[in-house]
Image 1: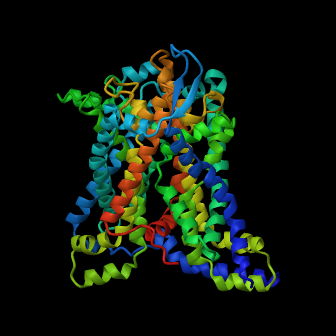
Image 2 (image 1 turned 180 degrees about the vertical axis):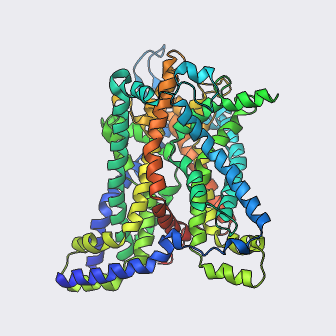
Image 3 (image 1 turned 30 degrees about the horizontal axis):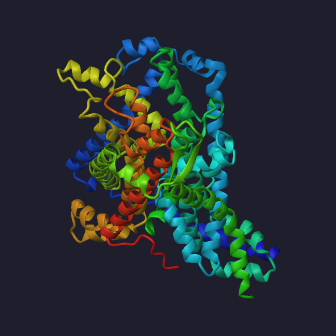
Length: 314
Length: 299
């Protein structure tokens, strides 16, 4: 086994240095120095970029401003500027309303997205590795069926899935949302391509000669080399589940099981009758986008790494 | 090594995924097909007897295809897609090329700003934009009114494009990131060589970069087409703000309402099947059109 570890260490470091130039955006194509580019071009480019930034950021800015307002403030004051801002008090209202149901929805979302994405990543890693590293009859057939799964609208699956799940008593339980969330055909596709490109057969052969079992090899070598792709699959699936609305809407009727997306729409739907729900909806929306935005800004590097692998072969 | 070994080992790795894939993808499709061929029938002279399921042949499909609302909904999302998908993909391409061009400044800030909306769930984005569309709350309507331009974002003629705006806002940055990922995977020397040969920035973008990111463009377009057909949460959320969105606004919304408001699961199943078929036809049709099968994996 020491031989195996040595081979692995040598290889994984080799693999990282080989892949790095692509995975690291900071080193991506060299920019000519400012002096080489005419001023006119720079001004034009930056104006277009700035206008686009305003378009993408204004709704987020509006949300941040409005989160500090009461329901009457929402209607009575200009939307893009503060009026009587009390962010802490407003958020406290959101969190404590209706026996802190919002906190429950938040934790539900975290559970669905966290557990679902982790399981989906592991399953996709194993399947992608199996498809890339073993030759067996029907391999391409299996892969093509999985690929077709990428193209099927998930909302077309949700209705029949609900009918099936209610037959076996799974509808309106945590499992109803968790189980479908654990399947990521796109993840399998990405993992297969990544494993085929970066896990060398010679290394696996060496490990087999050393007497390691297939599962051990997968755990110690495969998963480790595939880590960048796995982070990408996890992120994709996490955001996909966190943002998912149709599946929980179809599956769940008990509001204690709702994720945030479903909870907020139920508040928005009642706001006609209970005006303070306008304020809570805005505050809740603000809280709900915070964690994901931090996650996305912080991990941009990984989005890029995996996306390249996926799109190159599409 | 014996020949049986790879197959057995592969099975160990593939089995867990395949079991769940079968349960969550193949079984529902099969079940939807089966359900779509049945209908509920009440026995007894006045139809008050027990309800039972009988074979309906293709009855649900002809019913769906003769339902004017269903076809109208399809027409609506197709019109939506024909405008919104090109606008979004062109927008994402322009932003990606500009960000990767030599004249761009503050690139990390802009890139993050464009990508942020992808982290906002579709329903939350719809709630957010809904507030920006409603007169009385919206600073946009407010400001435009002050300069003498009265716009109604939720009128019969405009609401579809207001929804298109939400979708564009959400996904342009994501598509841009896919395109940038492919742009940066091309060795920088290629661009430098072109510049040395006297190519202008415009020529480099049009002649070299665009052809190189073609696979990523195909990928993002196909995913956008599939996304368009599933249009659901945006109209559902905006429905509470305007009467110009009815229960049959998109095929998905109609299928949902048939299943849960009208309790007509069989018709809803047929609609779900039709939706999946159209999605597959359009995506494969597009892949054909651009001259690739999309499944070519030479390994």
